[in-house]
Image (cartoon, rainbow, N blue to C red; front, side):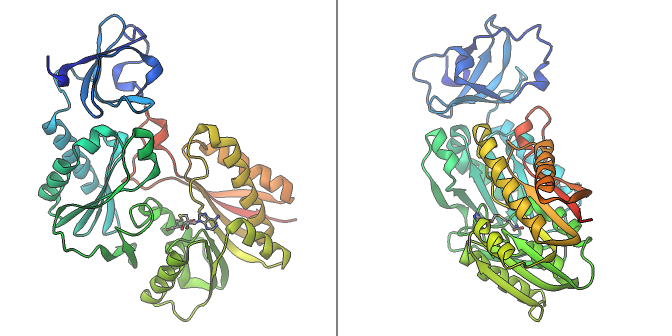
Length: 403
Ligand code: SAH
């Protein structure tokens, strides 16, 4: 028996359960496993059997991770070999081609949501940037990179495996060119909703640009009316500021990263907004919003797009306090009928949680809130219903009413 066909047995009997295989959650935790052959290496493919030896699926195994198996296939006749992975990548790219994505940058593979747990791939014009977040995908990354070049025609694939969650999988952090032109410069200008943005896909945060907010930036801009004073808090490279600039009287950007603010200034200039009154503030947003409150500053629109406060469910309560704090401060800074565009990108904070947080902040602030629009993640970051963790980005456009 080859390692590819080694079987792992679960503690439970899944046959006869109400959950059909297509609705199974794709993660199997160490505690659910009854029996594993010795010495299975990280990243190998295993057959998953339930306690009564019923076939459940095939997955990538990792003895170093609490998430011991990621299910890739529940069809006994379709083991996740190289061709299977190529087929899923092809399907994911094909699905993006049918979406209306107004950008030269898009996510072409989104992990579990594209039935490829652990693989994230973004395309920026002539480049692709991939992340391999499981041992299974890490083992196969060179072959995946070559396949992406073949199918998309990009000249270079880089890996951005410098994210902390790889440590939970026992994987080292890594960053570099995986395939294609090795001399390529990774700094580029992308175009989103008709605006130009600079991104360095090797050096920038995440994979260089937050494309999951593409549709929300367009939407938020629809709520800007002439002469608004706008505060873009957690601005990163100013993508929301650029979208709101055409009608704004002033723009104030806050971010703790000087490098991001410098790019934001460049982005605003490149899109023809050099002359608008603007301020770039490098500071901790929690502290700076307090300073602004103490100075009795006020705005017509505030965008709050913080980083992920809750890396997992155990952090949800602490994260909720953080979200409430910034939302309350923002409400205090908003003029009557001002617009609050507020986001959370924590999977552990549900859409309803965020709504409750906004409500609690409104009560403490003594204002009433109308929700004008509900926002989520861009369609190239699809939400898989049997994998609720894939729904991470939630947002509301709110109107703050003072009596
Ligand atoms: N709105 C941005 C994305 C924001 S990502 C866009 O549309 O592109 C979150 C940003 O928050 C990052 O740029 C990070 O540098 C910044 N950040 C994280 N913690 C912060 C803090 N405590 N105060 C200010 N900025 C912070």
